[in-house]
Image (tube, rainbow, N blue to C red):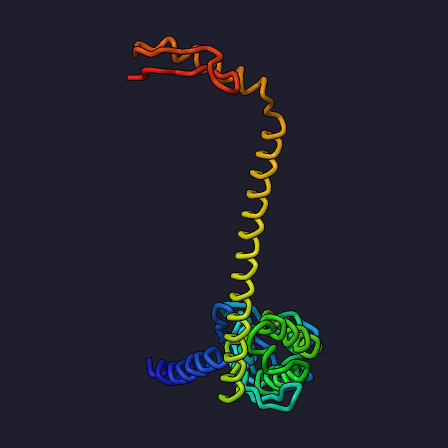
Length: 271
């Protein structure tokens, strides 16, 4: 019985040491994350093996795990760039991105955990300066917003693809021009709109006038054709036909056939 305390104390020490060792060795990687293993005595960052996935892992206590988020993320960037005519344009943009999972070890070894500020954002700024420098402020304000967004995306993608970063989208949220330039552009756009509206009214009036001319010409042609086709014989026949219809009316009347100077009937005594 006297030996129990002597055995118990070392056992307790071993258990405590084991608990500490396990706690130092246990790593839990959360959802949407991956881990890069760093072997202190085995060559440093592991780049020839896949990163550690989600869940519980045991590693040697002298090694380290660097945890990265591998889901899509968003980075914001506000920058001032120059247009084609040298005016300062403020661009508010954001990038949707994520690290390339299969080369996460290389990303950590070559670019570090600060890859967003060291690689991604400078690449966006460089691409934005290059793209915006091709356009005038008026183009940026109106028709070319979608075009510059696509071009910034393509140019940024070319840079970061080689840096182990997957770029999914670039969104240009706002383009801010100098106030005087913005006012001048808006004034010009209003004038162009008014001019287009005036031209539309003129064109509409011309079409309406042309329509009336065509209708009038049609009526004139119809009357001319009708006049050319009416002979004395036709007029007499029409008069006789009308007379026959009148004679069938119950109203008392006297009809003298052929009494007129033109050979048409004369109707007397209509009531």
